[in-house]
Image 1: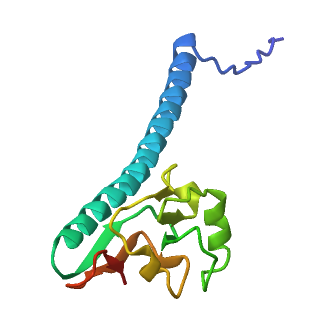
Image 2 (image 1 turned 180 degrees about the vertical axis):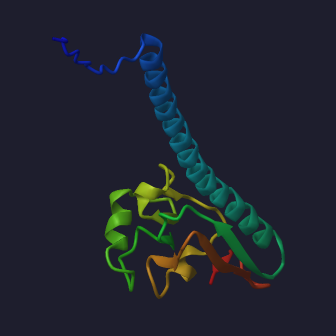
Length: 167
């Protein structure tokens, strides 16, 4: 009588293979964090570049005798509006909820705001000199321009104007 042998299959992984898999998972996780950080940094750079470029263009228009110039700039896709506001005055004809949100992050002397503030990388508002904010906000306060990753508007200054208007 033959004794029947039973073979039991056993899956064995060496320590080296297990350690390699753990290292691969760790590298993928670190790469994800690094990529996410650089994408966030890109959004912060877009916002800071927007403010710097706008301020430079407004200064150029303000220094000229008269000008009518288009302005265009890229913004993070999370920014819905670029708003010019006089926060010392009451709300007039603003998009729903925007004025209240701007008041939450209120710095009274600031005259340009990005909405929603959480998408602006901590740079939700700024004071830009040489803007005719009383004229810009005469009919709408805040005067908001919609943004879909890019914002476009006109900078104007007449011969007898002291400050720059946004249209």
